[in-house]
Length: 287
Image (cartoon, rainbow, N blue to C red; front, side, top):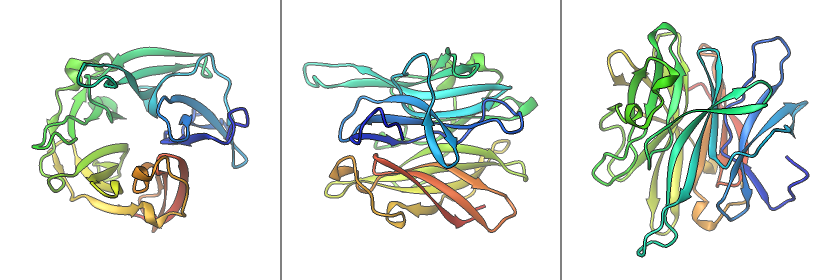
């Protein structure tokens, strides 16, 4: 990736590929979560994909963010990431707090303009442009019986609605996964049938094996608040063996993007593996 950083640096949990404009031949970029292997304390950095090689983009600053994603909303490139800060108590001297933050990418990564933030202790918020109907917001409150993450949805009228109060207003999608599991959204796509195609993950924690993740999809009818059943499309074991952040992360897979033609038989799933590396593979089109 970036020869300046050395071999002990990991690049994972990237955004979907994106372009800064719609001009023909404009470069393709991805933001990556970058951090030392086996440690926390990451930043988000953009890389340009050129001839199959990721090249670092020179930017004004490194953003101290986790799990970046980028989406085009109302003609603007919006960067979403997780901001983490210390929140210690005598009982938990290493405690932290976190929230999603939203930036508009100005120019050619010339500036990151803050435009909003989510509620404390909520991450995994994703946006989709629904045109004249507004901005679809999939949030991730902790509202099940075990305080695990569930999904909720609402429509925002503009980017000015990216506030903690309004981002907590989503209507929960009930009973998606078995008790003890949690879900998260990684990307959303507009499907030809009018529904939102959701790429996400389902996970649980095993006391011996650690966190166990799988990539999943479902369709969401945002007008009726109805969904298709969650469909698992891949697990980490279906990818090549790779190094892991820690043994506790051996079962972690964080899907990043699904490249597909709705009517084609195959799709390309890209995913972060074991909180350390990034890979992709061809799968049957899940839609």
